[in-house]
Image 1 (cartoon, rainbow, N blue to C red):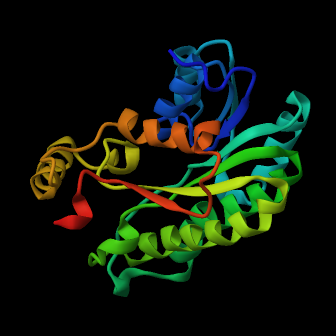
Image 2 (cartoon, helix red, strand yellow):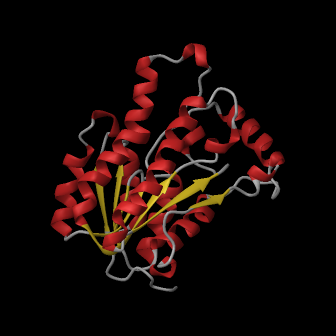
Length: 247
């Protein structure tokens, strides 16, 4: 396997499951030291065992506004970062009439405020020529009923990433956005198994490729954008959706 990340240090928020975990696995196989964060202690332990000794795990609850205080000392200890993937987040639905301040603030705390505060704190620790990747969602473009809050949060980080690309360009730091469509992940883990299967079967029928994507397929694009192979790409967003937005 091509060792694109030999001696590189990459941090993935929400790297204990789904696309983040698939990316962390590939990164370790390609020579990187990987830091992953996650809220679930058991899942973090499982991820650590899965990924091996070249992995550092940080238990991190994005909702309390103190994520940077937990992450920055670890990054300082390893001497900075060659890549940062702001991937953590969560999704939940809700029609307009059921939204309240607590619900709205809760999702913005995790999906928008946390990555902005993380990047603000970690920016001085990003090495010149490093890469930042932000995970958004096709929900930004879908216009589906009942997901306006989630769509708004993912639209916010997609928009912010374009400004970050301009701000960090003088340090030759690239910033791009990954825009996954229907991918097998923990986003639907809270659904009853039968409902989850029914939803994924329905989604698969709407895709040009007639199947739900695998986390590894989204991670492959993520790794390209984090690697030096994408050295002339910044301020852009990339769909990995099986043709979902074309249907």
